[in-house]
Image (cartoon, rainbow, N blue to C red):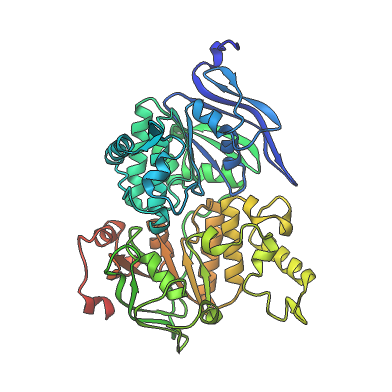
Length: 519
């Protein structure tokens, strides 16, 4: 048995000289990462820098070509997640590992079930999960099906899965990407509490505020290489962003004042039914979006924003009111027909944004392959598709192992997102619906996407933004609408309000009079 090395015994986990390759790309190139017991260690890097790959190696999802992993100084073999679990290593994945048709409770206990005389016993499990849920402020409906709850709630389920297994080493892969500001603050406190209890946390995030707030040390990766490890107390956001991207990054949105023109989108008394209860998920919503402005719907996740966008884009049927786009009533048109003047960056990139087993170039022309540019005599013009995809890949810096022929499933979440943004902005539609457009993106990519949305606004497009990121809401919007329990409860000029004021409306503590909102 390997002896504990005195000089490394302070580390609960060491990943030494890890190299992991995929076709056409070295995802991890000789990376060394050391995690101390009881610390929160942040892993920072651009999309495709190799962060999730490195954590997947630690969790046993990938086997490295080179390198070793040590726990408490002893070399360990992690061939699969069962080995990781046996070593008390748990992981909350960026893309949830949940079964849609199972309940919340069934997903949490799956693989760690209690049985009595060969029969599944859920009583003790329900009690333990309820206690964890209460202790850490991760309240969820244990009997709800995963397919019926929001992505924010699904994130809570993933965290509870890990806590339920009493893991000592906790890997959080972009855990706040779909959480609200209040939920993020709660999670930051949960992570601090867990570390105080002696648990060791590896925390992947693109959000510099969170890293500065919660981490003890930061390791920065860039293009698969280890750039450096620094004490959080000895650095700042600008220095970290420069290390991550390799150049100075503008952390604030630069834009001129809006000059709104004609009404592009007119929503009148719009209603969308709920899947979970008898009342409407969206109730009597009215507002307009004009050309040359960015209007943002802000709110805590689960207050009808997702249902509203589904109703607006035709994914779900509405049950009241009208939607007028460029002067045409599109309320009852099919998704295909209402998309003639509408681009849509969806909230769930896997469910509604991409066909994961298609190539990148096929995904780039999903809605356009019938156009003459890409089709002749009912045959696809593959050379034109390839050329088009290569242009967007270069323009939006979409990184993948094999370029346009890469299977989208194998790409990092951030690069999947950039592919969708590239496709939708290039379609040149009058209305751009952007739902969480920078979710999971690094500061360099966020800077670029924000610039593109402002550029589209300045070209006369109408932009409807839905975001849970209050910094993004305040910096990017020309007007802010707050949605609470399916209704618009306030309208604000970002220059004349504060995050704290928005928070009061988002939690239902305040609301404007309806006539005041619609005025």
